[in-house]
Length: 302
Image (cartoon, rainbow, N blue to C red; front, side, top):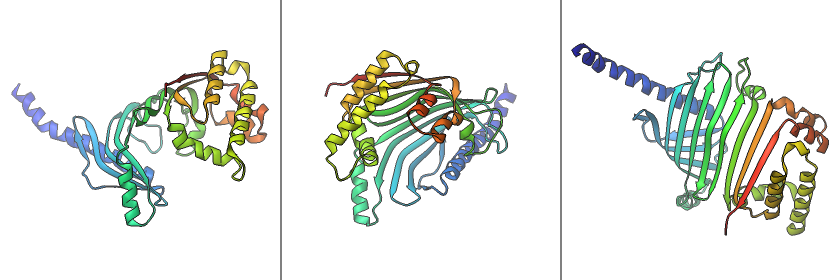
């Protein structure tokens, strides 16, 4: 018994140091991934607490120094997934949580930037990720990836499965090998669509000089026409009805949208070839023919 106690006293610091070294390695990978696209800084030390790697007070500025992201606390736990520069990582699991996420534009003048930062403080978001990789089947399983912007606005992926192929290829070519098997997407929008997606969408398809209301009505009518022309096997009647109701509520959808995508034979970059060669409705129908969609839309009281 004394021997076991002595061994524990000797080995515990070595194990703790090895675990903390893994935290440092993970942080280095994050900084390397951001390099060239964003600048990562933090004035707080990296720590390890109760099995979690924790980094507090993170600031990330984009490459053009026009956007700043602040994260109060980032904590993660990795089991396995040891990186290998010449092969897929070993099987394992990653759990990551970011809290106190705030973003604001960077204008240049210090006083205005200070005002923008203060303006962003009342609203903060959080991000949660749970993912696993099976090296034997080369399968990535996304159990949960959720961005919560407020109590009633969030975007979440779950039950999402990709296969990456038997041959290792370094990024970014790896994404051309990935094949989707299925995914679930849940969006809770109570002002989310209007505040994030509507204006960029409108600017990309609308005419700046024309009255917007007739343009929106025309776009809604065109979308309904496309919906009616989608392959029957793509989605059932209830899903079509849900999409029709959602289109009718645009540009102010108010409620929860759930999308389930199934790809029985896998769906990857090669499936997009028809749209690249001869884009149009027929090519789109060919692309979608390999998928099965389920849609639900539940309105919320305003």
